[in-house]
Amino acid sequence: MHLDALSWSVDGRVIVDGVDVTPPTGALTGLLGPNGAGKSSLLRLVAGVLHGAGAVHLDGTDLLTLRRRDRARLLALVEQDGAAPEGLTVAETVLLGRTPHGSPLAGMSTADRERAAQALTTAGVSALRDRALTTLSGGERQRVHLARALAQDPRVLLLDEPTNHLDVRAQLDTLAVVRDLTADGVTVIAALHDLNLAAASCDHVVLLHHGRVAAAGPVAQVLHPDVLEPVYGVRCTVLEHPGTGRPVLVFDRG
Amino acid sequence: MRRPPTPLALGVGLVALLVSLVVAITVGPAGIAPADVWATVAHHLGVAAPGGDLSPLLDGIVWELRLPRVLAAALVGAGLAVAGAVMQTVVRNPLADPYLLGLSGGASLGAVAVLVLGVAVLLPVAAFAGALAALVATLALAGSSAATSPARTVLAGLAIGQLAAAGTSFVIFWSATGDSYRDILAWLMGSLAGAGWSDVAIAAVAVGVLGTGLLAAGRSLDALALGDTAAAALGIAVARVRWALLVTVALLTGALVAVSGSIGFVGLAVPHAVRLVVGTAHRRLLALTAVVGATFLVWADTAARALFEPRELPVGIVTALVGAPVLAALLWRRRRLEA
Image (cartoon, one colour):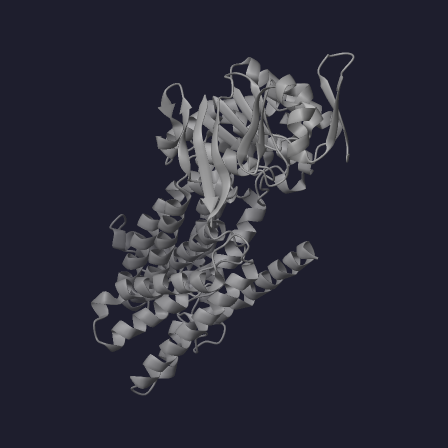
């Protein structure tokens, strides 16, 4: 997968500025950067929800030139604060992930229902299946939207702050679900706020600053004081996790 | 949240509708029994021997007066309720309804304008044009950004609706030939008095064709309920689908207003009540909304003509009696949510 010179501006203000990166296939790529760096906008551009300049290549096709439905069969997006419309149950919401599969005029098939039930189980929310979406906690809701994206059967999954609102345990559970997906060959790009969470779970990171790529590469290379300090404006110390050997970051205002 | 199985809910609804149709026909000054209704209908459909016990006069009352009126009420009720349910999802506003957002008023103005000009053939077209113009004006006035509050859209709709109502009243007043106040009331508050088979035909085609189209868009409507970004990521052409649905709703409203004048609150009260039972998934919601809306307006119209016999209430007064408290309850609940 290759994001080819993606740009987007609104009212003459450049929000995403020539982003050109290659997230590895079947891996978890963390999209990092301070508030307003353009993470959400970049994900929406890749999903074809925002229309800017550039291309998104997957196996030689530009996803942005595909018809919407065809693109939605290859690529799913989970927004930061997924909606909770009244009157939808968890099971009905997850079933909506099957929308791009099958005819838009036909109803949902048995196969669609089975795939949705599977996604509920994979995301660990099948116990909630008959609950109304409006009665869920923020974290539960986010897991339901993740399940909806899984039911979409995408090859590329875009997650905008999937661990927002979640307590530590739920954050780790969610990222474990995502890691399992990458093991099945799904390419995941997740905007993350928590640098330590990214350090502990990502294979690859892209660091955005003012809409541009400040750094991109393996975790150890990007989550480095020399790279992070100018972007976040903090002093940073990198330690090594005694168990996993992965980097642990400690910050002070300097 | 366990839902009743769809076939069960729909079956119960259809039986209730059928019983309502038959009973509504028996209500009125001329005493008619349910069995007479069956006999007349069977006779006219040619499936049974003439039931000798019904006089030609009573037969005429059933076949020429009450049956078309009751069927027109059912079709208009079904169409308005479905239009409301679709609008609520498409403009993402629980208070949306063809009447509250000014579509019905615009359609009435279009309709009386061509009637005064003496080109009655154009009635449905003019009603549609009026509905569409009112919808565009309301959405432009409210601003269609996501930040627009539901109440603001309703205010815009009220402004447009009142303007259209004033226009309608003026057109009728200006062309007045004596008893025009009844006409004004009939267009502004709705009336099914005098509905005949041609009205049934217009409403049946509109509800049959456009209603089927809206039902077929059920999956897109479900996706739209999740928000524009989520719907777009699910492969829905959000802007195109939204306008196609709104134009369909305007067409439907125009056709129904041409038949019955503007009847309020059916599109507001019925979908909310049905949603409480079967949820938001649109195929199920729209099918059941149509059946319940039909039953509701059949009874509202029966009350309108029977309560103060021989005088008739405009049916919009009856629907407002039920619908306005629903609107009040929705506003009350939003106030709590926003507090």
